[in-house]
Length: 173
Image (cartoon, rainbow, N blue to C red; front, side):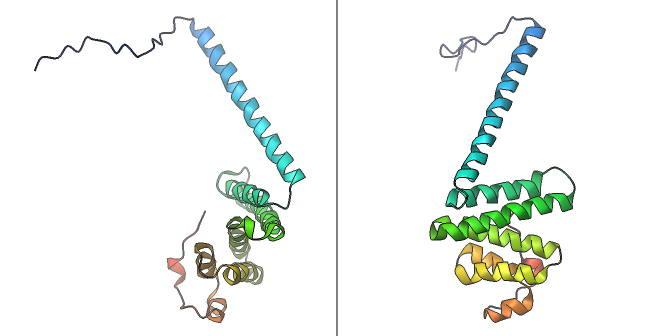
């Protein structure tokens, strides 16, 4: 088989850039600034949504996502990040409570993460309360089973479920 590899694709647009390096860098910096401005605009829109509609399913979802970001990528030390995440999860759970069934699964996810954060801080009673609320509301859902796995043994026994060893529980964030 003879194949001519010198033939060029007629659909490819030539992208050679013959500008000076300083012009290319200036162009890159300008695009980067445009992206930063766009991200700031999006951030302002999110804040506006939360301000105007604090008790909606969307607010619960946004709070959950912001809480996870605070835990995984947030600025500061662990305890600072944990405190900011807990605040977001708490506000997300409250927004979900107000919004009702339309806020699921975000309401349960917020409450599960809030319970997990409280447990990390040693507030076992508070953690159990939040996790039991998820189990009671969504007993057969993934959120309910996840919350059940995070509950301490005595609280799990109250729900009539078998005890799972702590080493088999999985975090959702």
